[in-house]
Image (cartoon, rainbow, N blue to C red; front, side, top):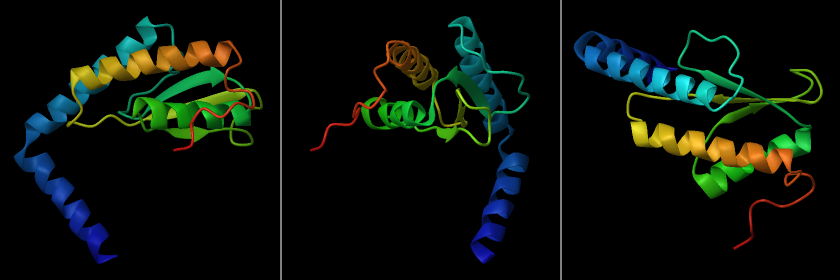
Length: 133
């Protein structure tokens, strides 16, 4: 538990001594969320840096999509599927930080657009998206 306490204290210290980090975080969040909406992604309603992206597909497709994002595009996001959300839905969660750049956001939106096309084309059904080394 001690490292958690130190981590929390460090975060509080940064909030108090480096307000520019909070401003930068919200700049990146706004860039990401508005960019995703502009590209037609459903991000629901969020007032947090945690950015949901809703898509349609089954669990195996969602798994392949998130692997594709991570392994082939270098983008990490968490995934939520049935039974937490209704069958046929995929919820991806992005968590931008103050150290991300506008270029990172641009790359993320392009990667999500490419993966959405693959999902719509059925590329994630039963197909390995990560090639063995």
